Image (spheres, rainbow, N blue to C red):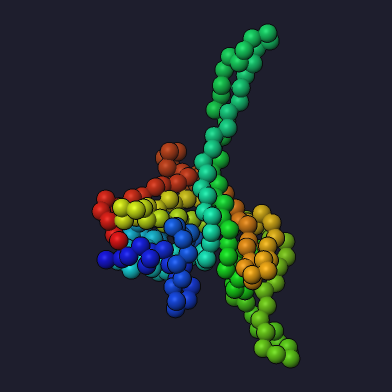
Length: 218
């Protein structure tokens, strides 16, 4: 069976560094085009996202760890409109919109993660031809479109039960530049916005699902 440490690993290197009480996984943008519910699309169960026996992301299904992160804060808020009448108190409250966001601090500073965090070219970092020493680069511009993908938060509670919050349609964007600390730590403020996936017929199933195992996997 998996240990809590195994599932909470970022899976970036051979040391499998323990990053915290929860991890974020992004599904490949290409998988977003698969509209059905299934292993390679919107997951049917947690096992479509991670192998619960080893805690490894199901890369064959398009799921990859976002990398080392900190301070994962999902939020779901509803806004309303208050209707007033002259000389009277509020007479009606009308539902407006739901807001679903996820804020997180990115900590991994590989070239590929800088590309992902800041919206650079989707191709892998390329070699710099003619440079006096071996170098690689990533180019940035003004993105012409928003890339939508599925996002999952995996968490194991103190009972050893695995939880997964899965967003159907989300986009990731930086909310500021990196912070360089004197200790060598680099922090990226990121926000993920979840939106309703109107391709889904059931309006109550358009934004997210929460899964939980019935037995401990730790």
